[in-house]
Image 1 (cartoon, rainbow over the protein chains, first blue to last red):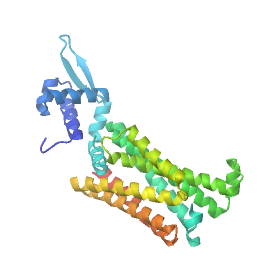
Image 2 (image 1 turned 90 degrees about the horizontal axis):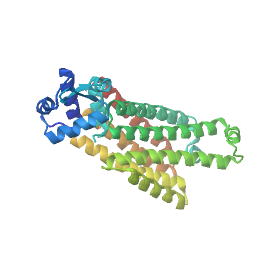
Image 3 (image 1 turned 30 degrees about the horizontal axis):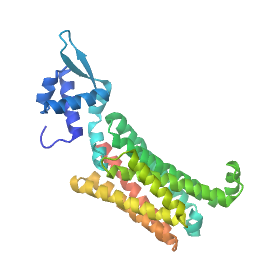
Length: 92
Length: 219
């Protein structure tokens, strides 16, 4: 996570963290992805809505996140997606 | 459309060029939708629709050019229920213009951030009015598309300047070629050789776009 990250880079970092840990707590994502609480909430909501992540809750109500198939596909194709998005300046 | 501005020796070749452009732009549209599906980046979907409209516009243009060469326009016009060949050709030309300008307007939206449906409606509305009140729809179409392409090229040049990479340079150059190509079509209303030059400039542009896709996929 060197240099200034764009939106797509942050999404990639979050998904990589979740993939590496299989089930991950939001605080772990926040520290590892170097995000503020506000940014993390916004990104997690977006990734849940778009179907890249799935949320689980344990008996104590603690939330964890896991990667969906779509999330795995994103990570697999990330370089191509990034290349194409950069080519046409398609960053949101 | 070719009937009015193409040199006779270029008949048939223009249809082949236009068909090739339709295929290349369809490939880019399909890839944009694939990127959208994988990344949920909405601008990728917008780019996909833009290239899809441009592809359909080239397909209509290629059909018109091919019909003129084969002399089969009367039969084709009968098929769609239009008995007057001139009217049938005009419908085809207007369909090509509508599809191409919609595609270009969608590309303009990429450069206008944040863009919304209202901006698109505004662009299409102004375009429609300009075409409707114009005495020469073809000339107005080339003027409008040149203006749109100048605006789009500006966006892609800025994109290259902010992110200097081979792939961003390829896209910026491609749209500059498309702009110059469109400008040549504008001149072709009086000098038909510019119609041929316009096609070669467009060919260079779409080959650059295809090269960019190859570079991206190889990364």
